Image (cartoon, rainbow, N blue to C red):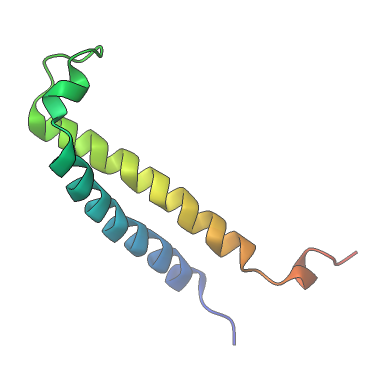
Length: 82
């Protein structure tokens, strides 16, 4: 029985969302957003803005790793068909 595409998508997006939240908490517990954004083009960015950008960057990173994991779990027979 094949797993529906929507179930695969939800599993990928939800797990990456949770891990992005954890990564954001850990990262910003160690680093202050004001110290990170001071030398950038956005020196007037608020803390909430920095947290939001950091969260979405972590989400894109964990989403890409989840997508690659899902891609590499496919059976080899799907690729070897001639």
